[in-house]
Image (cartoon, rainbow, N blue to C red):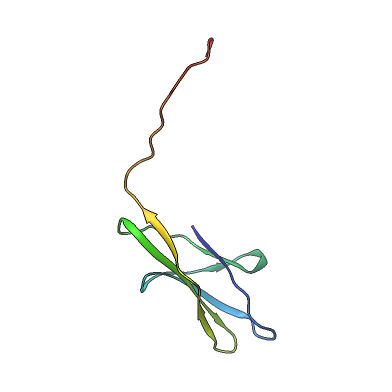
Length: 88
């Protein structure tokens, strides 16, 4: 799940938050408490993805966040048992 916190300069209000991976649209966020917007994302490619949020407000202003990098891997996590307690 991707989550962003967005705010607008009064009296404007946030009208939409769109998430992008590079220039590819991911989803429009759903508004939550405290100015948060979230969206589910299932990556279609492995490797480093550059994620941004594009915020629109009621005055027509549009601002894009700084990018964050997310590393997508298809390798499953590995768990290793290192010791066992007596009686377990």
